[in-house]
Image 1 (tube, helix red, strand yellow):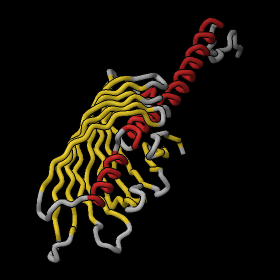
Image 2: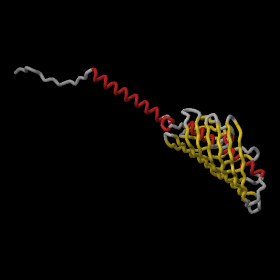
Image 3: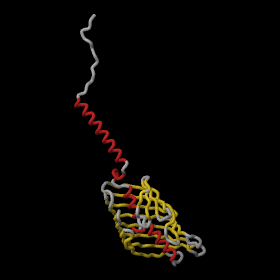
Image 4: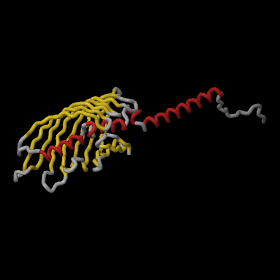
Length: 259
């Protein structure tokens, strides 16, 4: 018996041009994967708003140089020490603040309503401050025109208390322009809820306390929300945490440092 032919298994072969196409597709896929990974780690690339810019906007709502929350607490403390308001009465007052401080120019109109409550011994017990304001500030990183309100209850009038104790809420909304990074413009709305903020009676400076903040930033790309804790350190600074990144805010100058 003889075999005239032998059946062999067929081998698949690729032309050189086909192999080059496959290699090109693999390289392109790898490149797109790398680019995609980079985008997910940069909040600015994803949202158009960086955490640095959120920190700058927040600092404007907190620091003295932009008539922020620290100014509000300072005014309340100063007013409380010189107040001759009668028990159970409500007083309305207003003031204008304008000037330049630490490279920030500002101009604000503020209107206060103060209601004093006394204890059974007819001694001052607490004052409720309701504030409304509007104005603008221009700084190295942020320019803003905004309006806001706050409602605080201040205690600590006893003679042995060395600090005032403040609890309440501070809100601020308006238009802003960032002067750094991609220089975005838009609107922002910030809400700060303060818990046991302590203010020295001798210096009127914030000495401690905590808060939670929520900020909404709207730019042409969309609306983006951030929230987290705010801690007053007692050394003239506050620590703000945004998406796991900590920022230290100088309460006087508004300068922000990434921790």
